[in-house]
Image (spheres, rainbow over the protein chains, first blue to last red):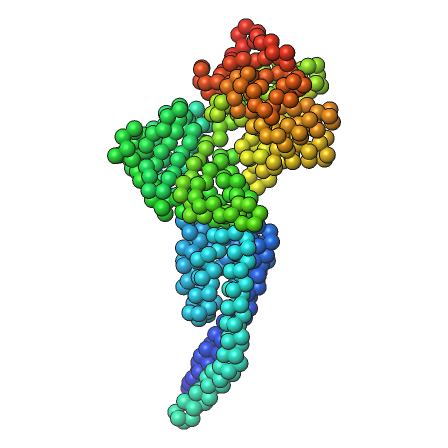
Length: 174
Length: 332
């Protein structure tokens, strides 16, 4: 009987702690992914504004040079663009929307910034593209700051909450 | 013929899906003949061949009846422009400023729309309203029979001027002459010259991402998108050519640059718009060149027996040169 109790207590405690860590890690992941995204967009800016590299090649370059945990989305965009002979680049960005939410834990505002880049990416001259990149990078910078604050506030909170909830349930059951 | 069809099909593959689906269905016999595909916003889809334009219906029928024609929607033009510019108009801005984009295969696409001027002249073309797709057809070997008339000895060449009205094959002929001069022809006793090709409108070599899409020979250096007058000077200074090849000369600065090349002992092959040697001689900018008897050979083209018929081959003194019996006199 004691053995069964011990197993139940351990299971409840572990489940609550994992859940707490899972929620807490979402904030960390969003922050880290936004930082990687900023780096990827800077690479893309260099390729387009300074190298005048055609967009599909520029996207591959970002995929290769950027942090893989985020840069893969640029290769996905390129694959969709060429594979499906899209009429507009934005269509390929839209295809990736779900992945941005679920795979990279981005919030609506983060996704909107990336989609706004997709609407105009490659469509104008280099001077225009440079202005667009500056604007997008500013917006992402602001999102990074916000994500950092949220991470600091919530990461520990959720983790502790998970542990405390686990302990609370165990006390109640005992 | 199958090669021509393949060229057409691969070109059409670069267009918007709706247009591709229609244009791919035109009769096989016409695919090899089409010279231009013309897209104009809210206007009928047109193709041009054998000196006439025709409409294309939704089912791919080629007709002169405008009521059956497929109307080119705004989105067809926009998405075709995205596709031909590889989603990167910024990368082709220099070409766009000149009014065209060259795509893989060397096909040139003329662009119509709102021209935007800036401090340094044309900056861009916006609100694109029409695309004129010229299918580049390479005719390898068409100049083989001509080469013996253009060279003297193993390593010398007559300065040559190709005179032709538009759409008579002067660029195609020039390209093949350049290929032969550059590669050399054993049976004509031609060793192969170092040729500098000044390809101002990217028509001759059809450069795409630094790779010539047309065969312009082993020993050919290409200055792509370069003004003829600048290109000739650059080639003299840095490429040490035996021959400089340029398309469509005529401007004052071109003539000055030609003189510069001749002073450096470099030979020249060029084309010019015109229907006869007399007409070209009357052009003010060309008068000096004719007086100095710079050119040793004049090739005059017309369409009397199809595109690229050689009407006359004339030597530097104005005397006609007769082809030996059996030599064909049409390049198409």
